[in-house]
Amino acid sequence: MKTIRRLLIVMSITIHCQSSFSQQIVTEYQQAISDSLQTGVGDKDYMPYIQSGYTLMLPSDNEVKGVLIFLEDSGYDQKNKSAKTLYEQANNSRFAVLSVSTELPFDFYLTSSSITSASELIKKAFTTHNLPNTNVFFLGPSLTGHRAMQYIKAMKQRSDLFYLNITGIVICDFTLDWTRKWNQHRRDIRIDKINLWEPRFINYMLEKHLGGSPKTNPDTYHEFSPYSFFDKENRNIKLYSEYPLRAYSKPDIEYRLNNQYRTLYENNLTDIVGFLAELRLAGNDRTDLIIFNPQDIKPQKFKQSTWDLIDKQELMEWILSQKQNE
Image (cartoon, one colour):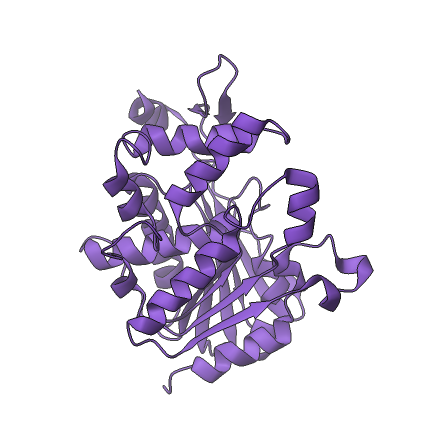
């Protein structure tokens, strides 16, 4: 039925160019289809589909030296929420910035079709705008970063995806261990001290697509997790061990304790440190960890996201330090 609806819908593509810091901004999105994604067991647990497509910032200098990729959501992330914070620095360094969205809201890349869709959009942007497939970096916080890890894994396991010559990865406060995350949400639901929409939504999606819970089907959770403390094989570490990797985290331990009743186990920093430890054991000595501690954050900036706290110029300098010679 979904395919039939697609054929009946007249797709609209909007291409918009504008000048900002002498950059060229190109947006190309398809009209969202009239369908909804089931997000829970309730009658009202549905979310409408969003626009699939991409936003591309091309530097004012026509010679592009590299590409920064953000796999963002065109709904929640407003098409390029995180990507645009690096426009100025990328422009000055002759890097293009590409933000890509599939049609699913809050897409976890739980299905091969989502990754295929992202691959097609990336390929279209690269071929249409003659982007160099060199000095390519994946970046992003939250689900944006999670999608990058899933794309890299799929790219190495499937021959049909657009292959990117990845130079480095920047991860920022997102879940790597989905066994831990499922258990965190089960505890959230049990103690009932916070808004439970997210715990219920994420666990519903995990159980639906991974064939149950970590207790009934642990291998699917290990396979889906770039890193899991509970995976004795650490099966996915080798997929990321060749890349330079910069990791950022803002633990907010006291805030989480006081406002969410969460323990150290229920913190993305747990995953990030474990992931870096396994990468280093696998021989990757090009990993960095930057933590924003409460005493280091100015009071007026404390409520900002981890991504917003990052010194974008220093991050761009790190990216340039990993840049491969042409």
